[in-house]
Amino acid sequence: MKFTPMDIINRDFSKKLRGYNKEEVKNFLSMVAEDFEELINENVQLKKKLQTLENDYEDLKKKEEILRDTLLMAQQTKEDIKNNALKEAEMIVKESEIQAEKIINNAYQKIEDLKGEIEELRREKFRLVSELKRVIEFTERFIEGIEEGQQNENTD
Image (cartoon, rainbow, N blue to C red; front, side):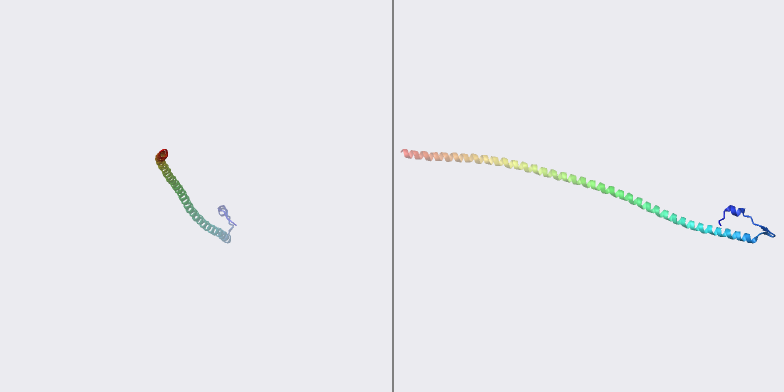
């Protein structure tokens, strides 16, 4: 039987010649003591449970803080990786543009060199054709001279 504070206050004891019945008072106090002991034990258990819950709460708070810090660090690392990747990509693009420009400039230079060589070959061709024409003219005149000389010999 559980007692409430009102039960204790309103409890009536029967009176005997010398006052309250000692046996009833003793039994009542024994029951109150049992209930009080149960309350003390329950209070101790609740305090232990509360302490455990408070410890668990503190552990969870620490874990939450660690997770928050880890998340922030992961986000920062992600941003750093992203920024580094962008910088590296920009650097690769710039290097590629520089390399492409060098290749284009080299190609233009080769074109100019080839144009110069072609022009020089044209001049050489013109010179050789002119010289060949002179040789042919000289040879034709030489042959004509020989033919005239032979005709003169035949007419003589």
